[in-house]
Length: 337
Ligand code: HEC
Image (cartoon, rainbow, N blue to C red):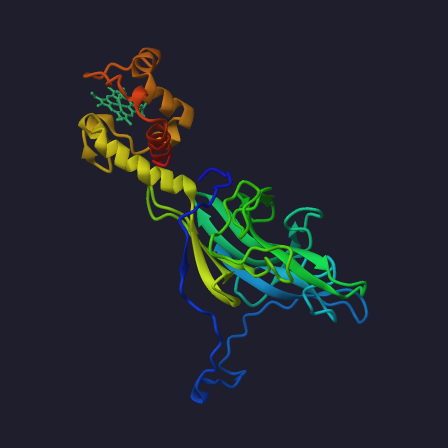
């Protein structure tokens, strides 16, 4: 997938999973047993008190080639609360291991951006790999100071953002500047109609975090982003929401246009249709602009590319409604080998 932000769109619903905590039965409790508990763990190096050093909090692990990579939120030791301006939970650390037991710390991979949606904290990283790109989704947090007391900060807005890496050792990351998903409409995103969104009240847009992402399972399928939010119908409790990627929704619509226009008389996808004109990799070989050009001006494009296959492509699709045309292009662009 090319490293653009994909805007997540409106097809949202509440997965009615209430995260109300219920105490487990007594027999489900476990006692820590050093002999049977795997020892795999990462412990950050610590400076002697009162030197500033960090513990790990939210984390994710991924294996790439021979290495396990751990990415984690750094929490200032002796200041375990997550507020207090931007000193706490303000960076993602990175450590690597071959055996999940001996870890080596590498440099910070992401930090906060003062004044922006991720001004004060970075929480809950999660990783998805697809087509050679490693994506990290995470929660960016802005705090507000509630009173003159220096410690009186609360996480005011929580937003889901993304960064990507194509580095084999996952040390270089590019942050996507705009948020990927958020509860209130802004930053070009539509907001979540059912989620609490009122920045003027106490904790009005807090609690929109902890992304879990499933990549598309095939062409025209959506990326799915699951997240925790608070529901307007029951604003003091959490629910799990899900958003799907707009580009994929367009592609799914485009697949229907492709069918309705009977493109398969001359083309095939996945072996279905006329295999003389296979389009399975057209999203890799042509840009979206070239694909559009083929659809709206097949005569011009055939001349330009000296295409000799007969019958020539029908020159009637330029009059399709713009939405259908856009969806068709999105579908073609999603066909990659
Ligand atoms: C009557 C036959 C015919 C129909 C119907 C047709 N095409 Fe084509 N199309 C062609 C021919 C011939 C070419 C030239 C390239 C080739 O030889 O395959 C072509 C080329 C293309 C290309 C460029 C492919 C490449 O790899 O360079 C795209 C994209 C494309 N068509 C999309 C469509 C879509 C979408 C539809 C339906 C809306 C459609 N075509 C309907 C015959 C057709």
